Image 1: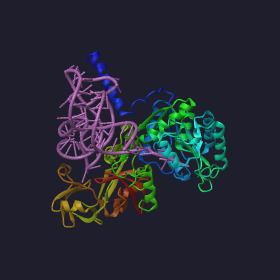
Image 2 (image 1 turned 180 degrees about the horizontal axis):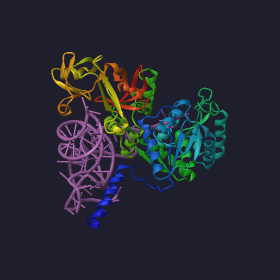
Image 3 (image 1 turned 90 degrees about the vertical axis):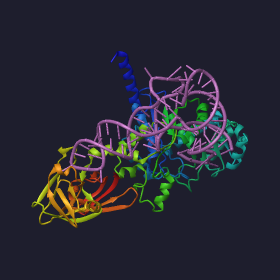
Image 4 (image 1 turned 30 degrees about the vertical axis):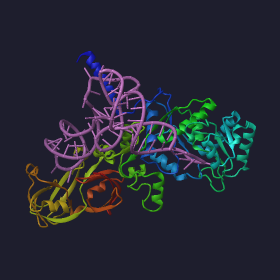
Length: 501
RNA sequence: GCUCCGGUGGUGUAGCCCGGUUAAGCAUGACGGCCUUUCGAGCCGUUGAUCGCGGGUUCAAAUCCCGCCCGGAGCACCA
């Protein structure tokens, strides 16, 4: 290869490699990147929310920067948080392999938001209006403000104190940020930043009844992103307009807005449920909990035996495209299968068992099969039949398909299938090549097996007792059938959750 | 309705910003073969997008311009 050709090849290779990872972040230099993940702790994480977390974390890592976890829990009324979710979300993140350098709760930062509210009122970039929601909406659509907008800071601050002191009741006053009353998008015009929430009616799960004036999303997020030194924001495209709104506040304070990237929604073809639908389904008992395998919550995926690396690599491969992605679940499972295959030991299990008697076997037989065919060093498992107990279970289907023919019980030998009886012919492996290979479980080594399927149903059958060597949480492969993650393993039987074929 | 953002094979994604040796790459799926005492994994191959539609600019457009269609998001005192 000529030097030029070689160079061209190298450039091409480099580009190819880049494609596999995340594209470079605009305006990013090593060591200076700060990103954040800012969930509302009012539910658990699902695949969609994982996207924000993974992207933000991966970029921070890529540039040796800082990654911050920030709980956005500033609505004790409509989107009330629950103490349990703070911990559940952290558990999900830890499972994904995400480490955060700092952690904040917005509900503990109200004094900070208040301080900047005063500053904004003093600077004349915000005001407090008594206009009710409807009046405001009507006027702003016509490009006309409520009268208080042009009043001096002293009067604004006076109203601010009234908000804090309780002189105003819920809905009687709201602090708004001045933008452009003729902005083409009416949703941008003078957006709301603080409202009053009656602490007696709506206590906050963390700070209780301490506050009656709460910041809205755009205020809290904008102030925090600046104060925490966030350089890059990665969030869903539903926040695109929020960026436009917040920029007015940043301009007012003379701050520089971070680089904001808005990606599209991520859904799986099946089980695409919103947070509220999940909550509702659980309350109504249609789902057994957040980890119901029909759900696409992270905790459910984890329970199913999906590896966290499968999720991160799926998200990374999708990049930061702004269009919505409806990912075929097969795709996730394919990535996952490659991850679990090498770590899954093999066992025989039969789910539509038919007991048959083996005839003509050469005395007692004990066969050793590898726990994993590609990693023989992991040892073997033993299956035994004897003339005293020559009974084994095979799948009803396997029996039906092979009746009147010869097939091989894997590891044991070749048999002619007759009515309720399998007749031993030989153990010739070369002859076995052309025969169907079926799995089997000796009657004397059978324990109960119960599998929770991805549609919520349960499959009952039997499994070879060797599986007792496994620990809960490990993923195994039931040969010729599917992969499953074990939840309970004991003499009483095994309980596992279906992963994928 | 108004304001944004998108539209590449079954699915996801690269390329578009700086228009031409890539008339479209990669992954996954589907199909077939090899290997294997699994219908898994691995290896090999096949399939499959005229780059939403119509026009324009140009010697040349997925890449630039215009119109249209379709999809999504936002239009909360939610996040």
